[in-house]
Every structure is written in structure tokens, then in C-alpha cells.
Length: 528
Image 1 (cartoon, rainbow, N blue to C red):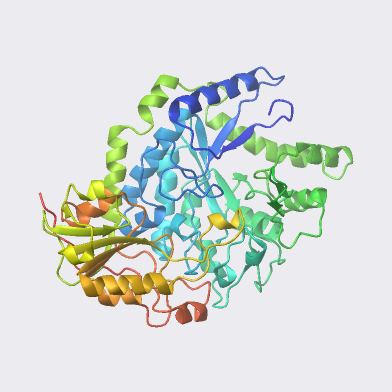
Image 2 (cartoon, rainbow, N blue to C red):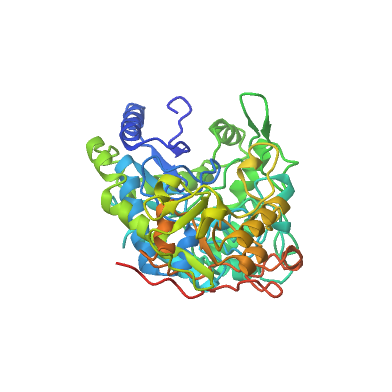
């Protein structure tokens, strides 16, 4: 860091509060001893929910655990989102994280898209309102020493991925708009920008068939960045690319993946830098090659004034956050703050409230002490609620937790992403059907994106959805100790044929959906 003059770092490891605070202070001491004494700005992907994909989110490292943003979308409550973001601000700032690489203001319009769990769902009005509330909670009424800066992403909307394949990979380069809704995806960002978001991250995707755009990845397109974002929306904050647009990634074993410079693959590293700077970008996410920019200035291909504009935005953000006055954190306070009891309790409550009851034949709430057969649940936890049996034939009720189906990919990093089909594999479908024929069965599905579940919907005694919930949260809901308040933030299609026929840019609106956007069934009554 010191020798390469890097001052903006992103954390990708789930380090606990004490070691992280000590590391942060040591890094800041190193920076203070450099010739200009410029502090370090530390950022992070989300660290507060269930998803642990190292390229998109981080296991908590002791942070309080909340539902995925999609669950907050199920509640559609700005006050809850604002309170959540205030907790994120407190826990991040305690360990020195002052820039959040979130929230996502993307519309979840393509059911197969693997990033759905990080969105607030498919309702444009809800997504716009909650993204703004998130920014307000992170930054406060004014960006200052008590703030964590928000980097809203992925401008101008990453949801309409062709075939649902993600733009992290060559198979997902294209974003398509068969329904002509490019403007809708872009407009959803406006409230977050008006709320004062400090930074914006454009996505990798290459828009296809959008008039006025160049057909290159969004960050490379001058009209998208200098035009639609800066000129039309009046945004003069920091623009940082998504990670890995300049250089290929090579892992220690020699494997890796190409730079995600879709539409600009033919350019060398210097050519990509030139194209990004011309577009209006300030930072290159995930890159370690400042010498390329220096070389371009020395070769008089980039002016010092152009570099100064972007460097000025980075430094202005650091000044507003108070890093020049005091970049250090109190290590004891960090340990006392991260995972604080009230934060943890609020996250646990949100896990329960955000759940959605999709169907209920009248079995909910379950009665205490019943004979319960479980799958996908910690039996020790379940034993606090019922008498656990080993076979379905011995049970009064079965309770099964499953995940949204996906097609596993063979290689890293694509294997981290849940992509492909949304319907249950034949073996799992047949197993669930046999179980429901043996004993009344309650099924809970973790929705990290849409799922095609006609068989559980028809045959289960009750079907619920969660968005990242601990076993005790699910058990509290099905036994009536807590109330599921959520409504579906995305549509659940009735078949893969309906998914495949659906325009990728249209939020909701598949043919004859199994459960429409906003659906909920009768919720269980709360028990004392």
C-alpha cells in the first residue's frame, strides 16, 4: 500500500472487531508516516446478512445479522431500513469502515438473476423509497465525521441481465430491454441520489439496443456517466467502477478470469483507463495499477487536470468524513459496538418480521410439544419447541427448510453465484411430495431470488419464505411466537417456461404467476 501510494482499500474478509480495529489503526499509522500523510479510506461490501459470496458480500465478522435487503423489501418500511442502515453505520464506523459499497438500487426484474437477494425487490416505488432511506441511515442528515458514505449501485440498473446470467462472467455480458424499460431502471436511482449519496458504482453490463448508448459496459460509456448521471441527475460525487475492469485476475494456482471490460476487451489496460476517464469515472475498483495512470500523464495522453478532478473528489470525501482530523478508531469501543445486544436483537426481529406466509391450510401456528420431524434445521434448536422424532411416520407435523433451486457452476468464482433454473430438481421434488403424502408438512424456502415451487404450493400444509433467517427465527414464526409481516417483494413464477418468455427488463408480469408481487396469505397469530 505505502509503496504503491494506494489510499482506498476494500475489505473482503470476515475479521472480528478487535483484530480489524487494530489492523485499521496500523494501516492509518503507515499512511500518516508517508510523505503527504494522506489517510486510508476503507470500504466494504455488505456484512450483515446471510449471503456469503466473497465477490458480493462478506460473512459478518461479528456484525449483527439481518435479513437480506430483499427481506427489507418484503417489509417495505422506510423506518426499518433507515434503522438498519444506522446500525450498519455504527458497526462499520467502529472498526474504521467509512465507505459502504451499498445499497443496491437495482430493480429485480429478471427472476433468474443471482444478485436479487441484494436488491429491495421488483416494485419500482418501493425500491426507490428504501434505497433513499438506506442512504439517509448510513450518512445521516449531512455527510460528516459521524457518517459512513454510501456508494449506490449499480447505475443505471443491473437487473435486466440477458437470460438471467450475471455480468461478472462472459456468459452474462449483455443487458437487454425487450420491453423498452431502460428509463424505468435508471429512474429508480433518483431518490437515493437526491438523498445525497456520496458515490455511485456503475455495473459491468453492456446494454443492447438502447438508443444513444455505445454498447459498451456502462462504466466505459460517456453518455451513461458524464451524460445521464452527471449532466442529467446533477451528480458530482465519486464514481467508482465495479471491480476488475482493467486487469485479468490470476489466482495462486494459475487459474483466474478475464477483466470484465465488456465491449472494450480489444483495448489494452492503458486504453481501458483512457476510455473510463473519458467517460467520467474517478476510481477503478479492485485494481492495483496506479502506474498506468502515471504513465499516461507522463506520455501526455491524460492531463494532470483530469487526474486532479478525480483525485479531488476522493480527497473531498475523506475531508468530509473527518479522516484527516482523526483517522483512528477506539479499539475497545469497536469490540463493544460490533454485534451489540440491541443491534443483534433488532436484526433478529427483522428476520422474523420479514418472512412471508405464502400458503396455510390452517395448520399454523403449530402447537407446542407436538411430535416434529425436521429436515434442514438444527435438531437441538427445534427441540426447544417440540418433541423431535427420527422418522416422518412418527410425526404429527414435518418442518423442512430448503433453498431456492439453482444450477451449480463448475468453476470458481462462478460457483459462488446461484444462477440458472429456478425449479426443484426431480429428486428433491419427488422427496418433498413423498413427505407431504406421509405427514402434513410445513416448507420454508430461503428466497435469494425467485423460485418455481408449484408442487410445495399445492401439497404442503403451509409454505413460507424467508430472506435469511436463523432456525429459531423460522421456528418462532411457525409456532406463533412471532408474526411474519412480509409481502412478496418479487413475483414467484408458475413455470420455467413463463420465466423464459418473460422480458428481462419488466418487473413482475410473468404469465399466470404462482404468487404475484405483494402476495401474502393469512399470517399466524402471535403467541405470548
